[in-house]
Length: 285
Image 1: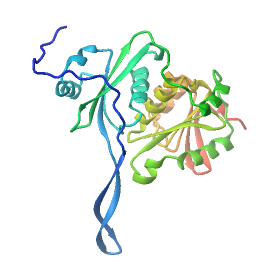
Image 2: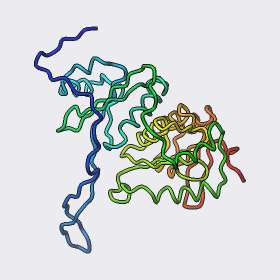
Image 3: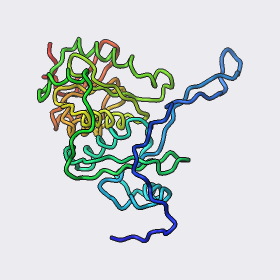
Image 4: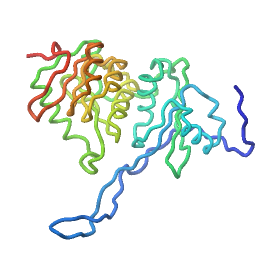
């Protein structure tokens, strides 16, 4: 359906939005210690609003202000708060898991800054025939291919060892304390770790990363520091991952969905112990 256009509008240029020079900033705040208030430095995270428009080229002809207003009105696949990093990977992961799009039909992801003041970005995903991949798989990703297509099983010792290693890696958690992390683990080594301020969005980013680089998640474990919701398990199911391990417990709905979809669900009680809510057959004793 045609919509009225403002003759004064400025068409957005489709360019890949460059990541900011720094994802954090240092502010001077008031700190209390030993009965005294003093000025102290605090490292804080930068975030932005992020919208995905799925297969809707109309917005390519809108002004930046108009596109932002459309996103705020809910005329998009999602509008969320996010760290401005791995935005393309998030676009792919979220669109595949929630937009009924198969990865092989995504031809391009176009990211623009729709509003510099509000850090709003619009993503357009065209559901067309996929072109040849534009990325080269780095050498350390090749190790993952040993598990391609397999239904992975991991020993309790390996799960504990990797959780300890995993929670020590994320740098933004160490410096700001405001992020969550997710990781792809192939049963022997970590493939990639990604952080975000939203625990489920972190999973979408890591899933999108796997899809971007052609990593088959059926032979991997996804680790997360965030709580496990039904949405988290659904994302794993769509991505083909059979095992989700978290530092935090799942909801009842997440457990029931994991049972329905045959996904192993694990959360840690302490540094050296965990609970298996479903899929214990994938734990090798």
